[in-house]
Length: 235
Ligand SMILES: [Fe+2]
Image 1 (cartoon, rainbow, N blue to C red):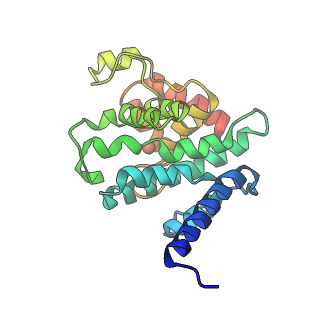
Image 2: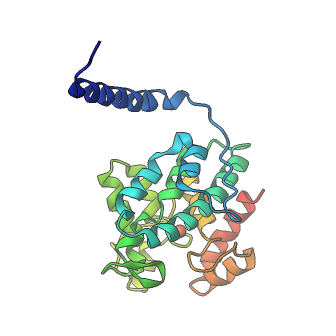
């Protein structure tokens, strides 16, 4: 039987749509494996990352969507976010032994927590926006709210240091809305904690002492918060 070319194309489209639909339908049923990025010493391709994080594709799709025109910045963002996500998931896995924690959410939100940096003025991160870098949290939050991810959005705006109180914002005259931007729940605290150990410009993991000294420059109370987290989160 000879099929017309138009029919063949239409069938191909139907097959593609069917595959896509099945992927999303079956996604919740797919085997959940503990993410094992092993990323610090290797540079996996994006395809490999998608495979490793098969059930957790959405963060990469969103990052691709916004960073499509700035591959350099995307590379910096991904390297940092994957390090933070790896540590956050390992902390969450440890904490889960004694307390309920949404590990999948921790991983997704950790991957997205800095998505707003693209629109800031941070040439070292290949970002050439017009907003001060400190605004990357609220910009990311706005993006994720528009994407229908209000819970992830809160992680964006509550992850700076150990969090920013209204008093911090006022005293330091930060260009941020006067609302409490401190991590409130376990997942938000784990991601903020993990983020403290990784810089986007200096490779490697910071030591605990280095984290303490960088927080002490602002306020000794910040170090106290970190110490409480460290006590609870370290394996
Ligand atoms: Fe970060």
